[in-house]
Image 1 (cartoon, helix red, strand yellow):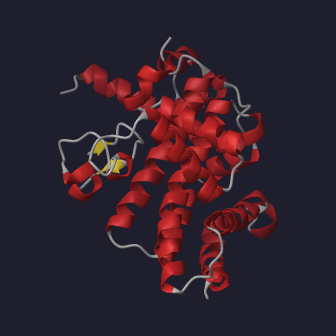
Image 2: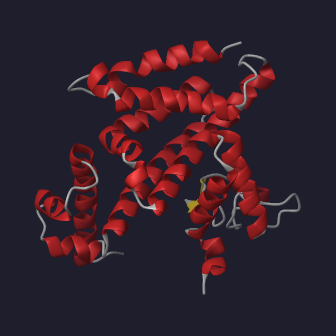
Length: 82
Length: 193
């Protein structure tokens, strides 16, 4: 089993992978329509909006949580160096 | 391939994790690590060999819970989406970690930000699966058209109220085990159109 490098979702079968390609390291939810992976800013914004939509949290709290959760994921470690 | 030493090291780490989850559930997150060492049957130094700081230990425990609930809900979504099955699985996982989870939600304000944010991540995993089945129900006309976050927070609020007052609802036993079906069935009645 792989985990999406961008959001951490478990990827267990073909339908979980971006474009149904099991060689990809990211999931369907982290892919753009053309199959490329969303950027850091796109992912942070979509994650923040998702937290607000489904949990109703304050925007700044949701932004902080999104960034803290992304900090642990392999795709975004480079953004938090220095 | 792991050698004998690595296998033993992994087993010790697992033992510390399981014990810490139980000890924190029973006594709260202020419990000294020396108690966890004693209960695990290892030296105090062994705890720090595996978890250099208290924060590392707490993060590992909450991540264990995070991974477990994530995989169980993900697997469930693969076998078909329905709200009753999701709520059942949610409470089944919470029941497994009941004491630990109760401490987490009761002591959140005193925990480090990293732990608080991981807890938001856990709720996000649940809310992701919750929002998928709820939106399907709203589109089909079987669930009331109420914003997803209100429905999710209503569910979580109900569950947390029973957990935080478990001494009133189910002294000396698992409140989730005792009230699981009642909470699920009545929540489904409340949201049905």
